[in-house]
Amino acid sequence: MDPLTLYAGAQATMAGIKGAIALGKDINNLMGDVSKFFGMAEQVHIGATKKKIESIKKSNGQISSEALQIAWASKQLREDERYLKDMLIWSGNADVYYEMIAERTKMAKERAEEERAQEDARQKNKEKMAEIFMILMFLIGASVIIFALVLGGTQVYGSMEEQRIYNEKIEKVRQLKIQRARAEENRQKDEGLAAIK
Image (cartoon, rainbow, N blue to C red; front, top):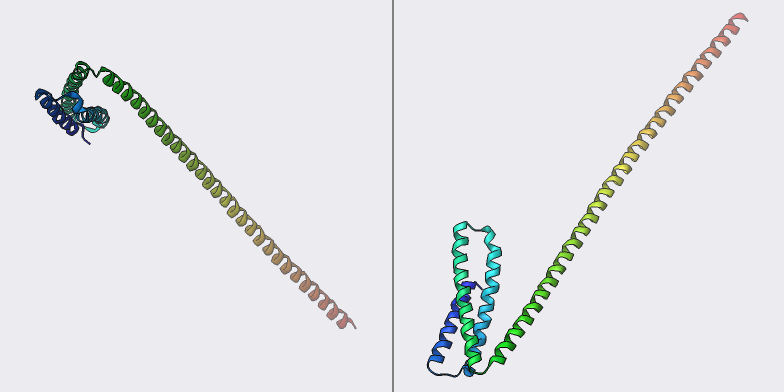
């Protein structure tokens, strides 16, 4: 959810808490609302951080406007948190406040560790995909080279085979010419001998 929308919700919750205290209600009876306020305030801070990351794509005017709204919301939320802290301490619930702060810090660390683990897992997944891609490219490249070698080898073999067949035909024609020449020579000898007799 948008941090400024959450801020409006946090402010409405805080107005309800202040109104109830002004009417004399005990802070102990408002713990649900106090809890709701702190949850919304935390979401505003998280959302503001994400907005800062998203501001890369915005104009300077948009960035300035959002920065002012976020700074104002943060200031107001800090003042409201300080008010609630004071109310809890004055009502004898200082231990609840400090325990809540300790638990919030612990949970924030756990969330940061989980986000870091998820980011590490995403990075490892990207690296693995890049490695698989490189292996596939290598295999495709090797296949192309092998195909080219096989195709080239087939063409060279085919060319050599054609040359061999051509040479065999030339040799047959040469042998045939030699046989004809000998046959003609023998016929002429036989005719010459027959004419002498």
